[in-house]
Structure formats: structure tokens, C-alpha cells
Length: 204
Length: 309
Image 1 (cartoon, each protein chain N blue to C red):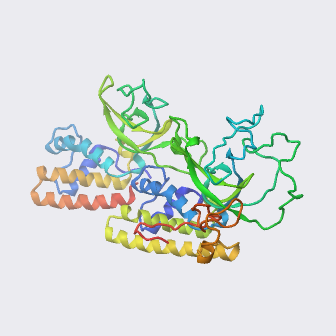
Image 2: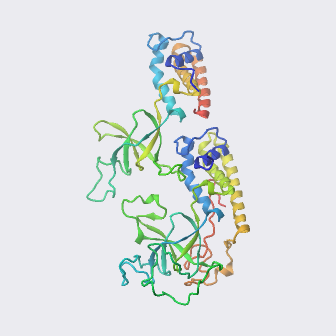
Image 3: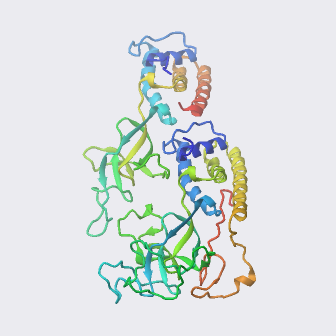
């Protein structure tokens, strides 16, 4: 079902209506008080909400790209651990997807599908200081494999209505103290909680 | 397709009253992660909890060691070029050591017979001279159509068959760098009747499927419900359902097939203490003991509330 909300301005205007603000914005770049405040908090609020729940529309799968691998026979002398290898006890260090907001799972690539013996695979997020640039990486014991993650879905046309609703409520809660008054802010907080409950139940 | 692990997981969510619509058990959502962590172990434990008819499998065992020295062995005086090589070190009290089958969840029994068959798989016992009989007077054919008699056996671990360093030993049941799980028995050319790992829901009977759903639900109810009191109540209900299903399965096993003699009887327990090669009985009726047991029976199934059934 296509979303009836197609731009960040639409979302922000919904948020403004929810807190009882009298004016609308035409563009997030127009320079009005509401637009400036909304522009400040919009991306962070969206990303935080995307991370909060496992939204189906934001699920992305990507094949692993390996960075480091533990020695096949283990750290048997004279081989000793160094930063050329993944942190102990992990076997593989793979790239963190650039558009990932949250890693949901890592899984192997089954030879046959469907997989009738699915297994959970542990993973951990790390910051590797030994690379040329400080880089967020994923540590795991499965390779080759697939990374399942929450992507940074920025296009409102991709969102489900309940996500849009939850985002508008969250924006409203953040805008209310600056644009309205304390009572409105409290009401907006309750509005956000109610929207979050609905969102959690469906998750797209 | 309803015969997928994901379909089982969806039924589990229904059982605990969750509104979440699961796509795939490996999708990485919170619900999927929790169920996936429990799925494999619950499946295996439930298979061990009764002699499920659909999971009965009989297979020839792979010989690892032969203490009789009849089979060409590694480091023994008998050497045949091209002949299979096995070890000759078998823990005391037994003649043969076999590899625990990869897909074995529970050994039910090892048939005791001397049937010399053809088509012995590679790596198993081979006569030194195939033209000469190893033993005579075996009968022709000896045991076709006759009642199967269980032989004593013991499950053990043998460090002589450890995995190579660096091998992903965690993926194969019974293998580790510290040794491999083995079956010790005095049966030559041993076959094993066991409960196999049945991964395909299409092969399960409806009772097993219902039991697995309830068992999984009892395991995941607490982590997946926000109201922990509600979760506890659901968990207790699902445990009762699971126990009921397992009980039915054990009754059906008794009604439809050969009974499992799992009830210890004192006067039978004390008979033939110490066991003997090829004799009936042994030290105990279970699958442990000095002389080995002759039937695996079934396991108790443990539950999240600490109870067993």
C-alpha cells in the first residue's frame, strides 16, 4: 500500500497538528521557527525510531565482506595473536554495512533452502582501531554468511503508516516544549507512547 | 508451506498470545532470535523424551576399534594392503568400539546377532581373507525374521578419535578436540536402533508437532511477554500441555509397538551384576553401568520451571 505521506515536510506538519501548533511549514529549509527546530531533530528522531523496533520495511540483507580471519589452525606457536587477526575468541571480522542502523542477525548461507536446521549465530559489534580509519566492524564465527540489519530508510514512501504515525508523535513530543507549553509537551509524551505501542504490535 | 521451522515458530507465537507476524525464524527480530535459540535444543530434547515411532532408525555402525585384532588394524600385526584400518584400543570390558551416529539423538538398543552380511560399508570390519569364514557354524541365514535381542552397550568418549585442531568440531555432534562419542559393545557388525534427528516437520506426527510447539512456547513465554506474570502463567500452562503430549506419546509407544522396559525391577537389577560378554542383562537396566545397559529407554524432559517429566 503506497504511503499517503511522501516528504519530511508532510511528517513534520502532522507532528505540528498533533501538538496544536497553528502554522504549517512549506519546506524544512524555509527558516521559520518550526522548520528550524524540526530540521534539527528530524533525522535523529527517525533513526532512533528505526532502531527501536524491527521494522519489516527497513530490513536489509547483505553478503558479508571479510576484513580479518583467525588462523585456520588456531593460535598455535609460533603464531600469536596480533591486531592482524580478529579479537579473541572470534573467527571472523567483517564489514559493518554503511547504511546499517542496527544489526539484527548474522546467518550462514545454507546450501539447501529452506533450511530445516536453522542455527543461531553469535555476533558482536566492535570498533577496530587497527584499520587505517577507525571503523565499526562485526565479529562473528560464520563466514561466508549474510548480515541482516535495519537500514537507514529515509524515503517516507517506503514507510508503513504506523511508522509514520509513530515518527510524527515522536517529533511532536520533541517539538512541543519549544513551540507550545509544558502541558502540551506532557500530552505529546502520552501521544508518543500510545503510537509506540501500536507500532510495536505491528512493526510493518 | 506449513511444514517449515518458521511455521512452527509462528505457532509458538500464537501459543503465547503474541501479535507479531513472523516472516522467517532467521530474520533477526527479537521474537525470531529468542525462538531460534531454543528451537534446536527443544527439538532434540523432545525427540529424546519418548520413543517416537516416526523417528526410529536402524543403521549399521561405523567401526572405530576392534580389540579382537581380527580386523586389520593400525599398528597391529595384521596388515593387508588396501584393507580398511581401524584401531585396536577399546576400553576394557568390550570388544568393539563404534562411532556414535551423527544423527543419533538416543540409542534405543543394539540388536544382538551374529549375522554376517555382505555390503559392509567402507571402514567397517572386513575379513582378512574374504574367501575364508571368520567363524563357522553361524547358520544359514541365522537371524532373518527372528525376534531381535538387545545387546549390552555403553556410550562413552574416546580421546583416540579427537577432531583435528582448528576443525569446526562444534558443528558435528559427538566430535571435539577432547575426543569423540563412541558406542562400546561386543556385537560384531553392529547395527543400532536409535531415535534419529528428524529435521523435517513433514515427517513428524501431529502429537510431536503439538508437543514441540507447547515446549517451545514454555521456553520463550517469559522472554517474549512484557508482563512477566502473564508470561509465567502462559509458561506453566504450556508446560502442562507438553507433559500431556509426551505422556500420550509414551502410551502410544506402549500400545502400538514393542514396549520399552524402563521400569527397574529389583530382582532383575541384581541379576548378573558385572555383566558378561554377549549375555543378557548387565549391571543396570539403564544405559550406564559397569556392564552396560541393553536399552536406551527415553529421557526425562526438563522444563523451564524446574520440573521434569
